[in-house]
Amino acid sequence: MDFKQLVDIGEKWCSGTPFDLIAAEESDERRLDFYAEPGLSFYVLCPDLSNGADNFHVWSESEDCLPFLQLAQDYISSCGKKTLLEILDKVFKSFRPLLGLPDVDDDAFEDYQADMEEEEPEADHQQTGVSQQ
Image 1 (cartoon, rainbow, N blue to C red):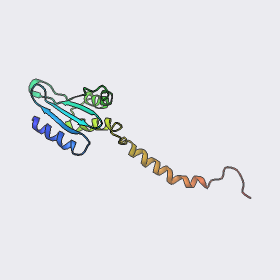
Image 2 (image 1 turned 90 degrees about the horizontal axis):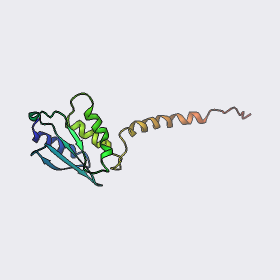
Image 3 (image 1 turned 90 degrees about the vertical axis):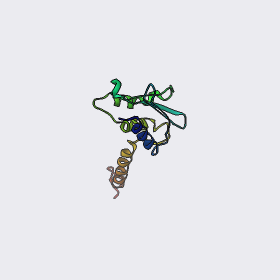
Image 4 (image 1 turned 180 degrees about the vertical axis):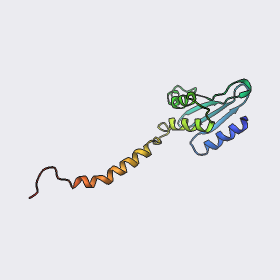
C-alpha cells in the first residue's frame, strides 16, 4: 500500500481517538508515530513489499507503554494479514485503561449486570424457609 494511504488511515483513526499522528517518515522506515496525553506514545512500522517486509510492527520507546502493546503485538504475529486500522484499534484497546476509558469488554459486563438487576426483585420475594403465618 502507498505510504500516503497509510498516513491517511492513521489520521482518520486519530479523529476518533485521543491520539495524534505526530510524525510520518518514509525515509529508511515507513514509520507512523502517535502520541496521546498522559504521555502515551507508540509507533507503527508499515510493511514495504518492495524490500520484502510484509508485516506491521508496533513498538514504543517508552518503557511504561511497552507492556500495553502486547495485545497488538500478539495480534500482528497471529495468522493472516492485518490492516493498519485493525492494528491501531488493538493498540487503542490496549491503552484504554491508561487513558481513563473503560475496557471495551466492560460493555458486555454492563449488559450482563443490567440483566442480573432485572432478576433481583424476583429473588427478594422468595421465602428462605421462614413462615410468615
